[in-house]
Length: 82
Length: 381
Ligand SMILES: Cc1cc2nc3c(=O)[nH]c(=O)nc-3n(C[C@H](O)[C@H](O)[C@H](O)COP(=O)(O)OP(=O)(O)OC[C@H]3O[C@@H](n4cnc5c(N)ncnc54)[C@H](O)[C@@H]3O)c2cc1C
Image 1 (cartoon, each protein chain N blue to C red):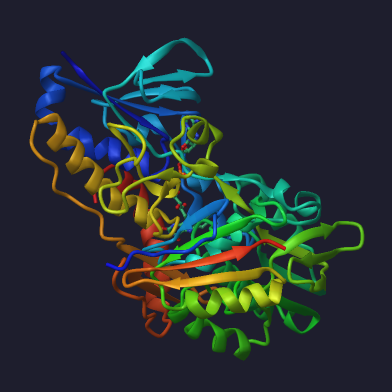
Image 2 (tube, rainbow over the protein chains, first blue to last red):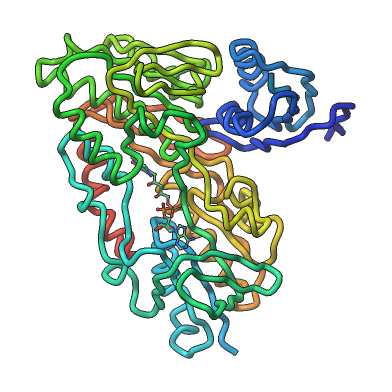
């Protein structure tokens, strides 16, 4: 397993590993509703679709993907609420 | 010493588990070595899937209610009270109507979902829903007199109960309005939070052409931020504004506050191991059904499948054996595609769903399941 390293400190974590239906992005959006502008949330997802879903949604909604760290077993996607 | 198992929540998961334990632990219950208490905040058990049919006049909310005492094995002690406090160190529960705490040795949380429409300003006043008894009845009144205008089905909550129910409602509304010769005067729009019509790609790929074929407008990447009940508009986090005449929403969901206050998980969802369903932050605490944060859908079938895992693990613990049963994410959901056709999806943590072509037979299977649910809950099926 790769050790995931990043300098970003997240204010909240959404662990959506294994989340099948309706999926990690839905979990992330639910979380973002509760956060304040400027807060950073990290999504842990083992679904390949998150790598495209999350940046697409972030662009549509004006939130910002700060970093995507790809690991062997899951990816970490850091999103800042705008 | 008598070991005390307490199940909080007498909905699908809690009731099925209570009956499952009555069987599994029959010898210990008989000898007085174990007691099982089912705690629910109402004397009645509520079966929510019935609510989908209420707005179309095809079911009554009472069809989804039965006294718990009629459903639960007589070896289980039923207690009607609301849990207001959980102390996982002292292993006690505080209740609304009692001064004395309840002591437990093993605790199972099956407290389901609480609707939180207030998260989106204006949603409660401006929208209808079929995710509560009162909501489904009020929507029926509205829908029966709705003969023209713009019907919007908006998925606001994420995650929410029964992830396919919004598609089902939309397909049923389309079919129902067609049958009544009103479809030409009613525009239907379906909105969804992510970039497809369902969070799970195979379900989205199947549903999108069906929506298009039926002239149902689709707004993806739509996360309602506010609703203006006067102007009858809703605005999304993504900046889209939508006019409506009748808004049907899937409101935001959360678990009960008591769970968060006990440090068991955020927003009332219990942090559990996805496979063992044991709480991550406390000993001898399990969660199942909607309140367990597993990544599996919030659906009755999931609660049902999780029962055997929790039932077996608890029984092993009580008998001093290592528990081995695990939950693999198994889910089965029927999907109504109109008033008399349906399909279904079956999947787990590893395997994606693939819906077969809709048929009348599957529709009748869904209705038959809902009827036979009362036998299933009793542990007879
Ligand atoms: C419209 C609709 C359609 C659906 N259709 C389907 C379907 O076709 N198939 C399917 O599989 N699923 C369906 N579902 C989902 C299904 O109903 C739920 O997933 C299921 O009920 C979850 O079971 P549960 O035991 O976790 O929670 P619930 O059945 O909600 O039970 C929770 C219980 O806990 C009690 N409780 C809560 N807090 C406390 C407290 N503090 N103290 C004491 N008691 C408490 C509640 O009163 C309730 O009795 C549907 C849901 C809806 C809304």
